[in-house]
Each structure stands twice: as structure tokens, then as C-alpha cells.
Length: 154
Length: 154
DNA sequence: TCTGAAACTGAAAACCGTTTTCAGTTTCGC
DNA sequence: GCGAAACTGAAAACGGTTTTCAGTTTCAGA
Ligand SMILES: [Mn+2]
Ligand SMILES: [Mn+2]
Ligand SMILES: [Zn+2]
Ligand SMILES: [Zn+2]
Image (cartoon, rainbow over all chains, first blue to last red; front, side, top):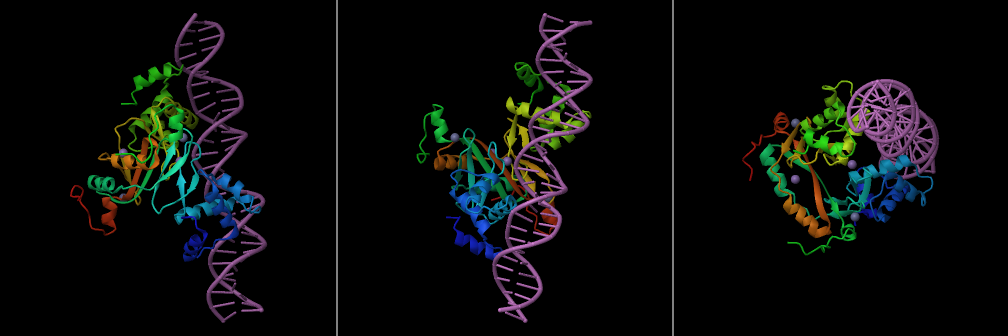
């Protein structure tokens, strides 16, 4: 998993950073959450194991963990600044526009699209940000829409 | 086009709303923008044709136009609250991370990527937001990088 | 083991985009 | 015209995020 504390300790060390008790509490709080979490949510959860933790440190740590790729920022309907554990080096998120549930989507090949953009614009493209949104299976069913089981595409 | 003023006048009227001069200025500002625009950007642009316009009204109007589906809220890596015309010809933007220049990129086929996401997640995907960034030809040349002429991809 | 530099911390203040309040203006059906 | 409802912008309030700052912890090196 990407949120392995030992792994992160190493990555931090390579940048002269330390995985302190406070940062560890932030890390655990995100790892244990089932959905995406906002900075305050992380703050509240992490404080139960580390009561002296400050909100400032939460922000700073979320930023650091995002930089090294351990967390991913997601943009939801309400919370524009929420975080989820990143399960792969590169991935995107799909947000349900009804209930806000977020899932990771790693099976992504943007090569063709990026190539087309390079051809058309002449830009050298170094990054892409992709955010998909729609309706999760649960909300689809609840709305009476026939359920489309994952895996039988094509 | 989705930002037809007459059409919107009708939709507004059905809700007891009016398309005032100020709201019209906001509408036009978004329609004329080549990329997604933030509330302040709209404010600045719209003020040139309607100098007495207030920022408050910009926020209120952007909200209204979103509610009736004329605009879409967009979440980018930087701008968390930006707006685009809802059903403008589908396209994306490529931003130069050095000079900020934006070009449109219409030659986009996300079908394969979206299909893969549907297969992997089971979500019904209704929207996608894609933002590419990199280096424009001018900046590349200025940085001494060999110029890659648009059109000879592959 | 001591020492100094760098990392790290939380409280408080500053910052800044957004929303609310409010008193006045415009629109429109009657 | 008249009145109700829509609409407006300035200013204040709000709330999340970032910065500042003075003190603490960690750790490499002497
Ligand atoms: Mn956002
Ligand atoms: Mn597209
Ligand atoms: Zn859902
Ligand atoms: Zn450039």
C-alpha cells in the first residue's frame, strides 16, 4: 500500500524530512478514512490519538504527503480540498455527483489523447489533470437505473 | 449555443427572474472567455462593459446561471471555483506553465479512457474535466529546446 | 557527550475569497 | 400611477487557509 509508514519514512528522509508523531497521526487518520477527508476531518480524527496536534500541522502535513504522492487531492461537490490515500503512483479519481463517494481509477492510458494534443498545439505536455464525475453504482440503483456490473465492459 | 441570451431570458422568466444588464454582462464575459474563468476574472472582464457592476452580483449571477445549467462549475488543479459555458463545443485547454498562455485543444477523444474507467469502477460517467499543462513552443525555444513543429506528430 | 544547525511545532495573526446584511433602486403586473 | 417582488452594490461578517513567530525537538558532527 502507498500509505506504508516505513516507506514514507524513507521517502521523507531522502528529502531531509522526518515522520514525526504528529505527521504519523495525520497519515493514519487519512489511511483509516473510508471516503475522502477534509483537513478539519483529519484534524478531529488525528487528535484522538495525538491531542496536542495543531491544525497548522495538519495542513502542512497534507501538503507534504501530497507532494511525495502518498495522498491525492480530490475536488468534490462540496469540499474542494479533500484528500484520499493514493493507491498508485499515477491515478485519477471518479466522483459521484450525488453522494460524493470517490473511487480511484488507475487503468488510465492518456497517451493517445496527449499525443493528439501535442500534434494539435505544438506544446510540450508534461502534466495532465483528469477528473471524472458521474454516478456511483449505489446511487444509480437507488435512482432506479439498471445496474451495470463493473468488469463486463467492451 | 447554450449561452444564447434569448433562451436564458425565457428560462429565467419561468422562475420569475430577469436577465438584467448586469447579469447580461456576466453572461457575456463567460461566453467570450477562451478558458474557464474565476469570479474575479469575470468581474474584471464584465466591468469593461458595465463599470458599476458589483462583485456580489457576479457571484449571485454565476450561481444562478449554474443552477439553470447554462454554466458548469469546474475544478482545476489551481482554480477551485471556475466556470465554463456548459455546452460549448467540447474542448480542453493546454496551459503553458512558464508564461501562462492557454490554447484550446479540440481534437480530443476520451472515449477509450472513459470506457476503461467505467469498466474499472462501475460508475456511470457523465462528465470529464481534463487540463493539460506543459510548455508552449515560444517558451520552449526561448529555453533552447529544439522546436517541435505542430502537425508532424507520430 | 556536548553543541550547533536544521527541522518541526502550535498559537495567534494575517490573508483572502465568499456569503450575508441592508438600505436603496428598478422592474412589472395591475 | 401604485405596490409587491426582484434586483442592486457597499460594507460587514464569515470561514477556511497561510504566514509569522518564538520555542522545542532531532540529529549529525566535534
Ligand atoms: Mn475544487
Ligand atoms: Mn474531452
Ligand atoms: Zn453516489
Ligand atoms: Zn509559454
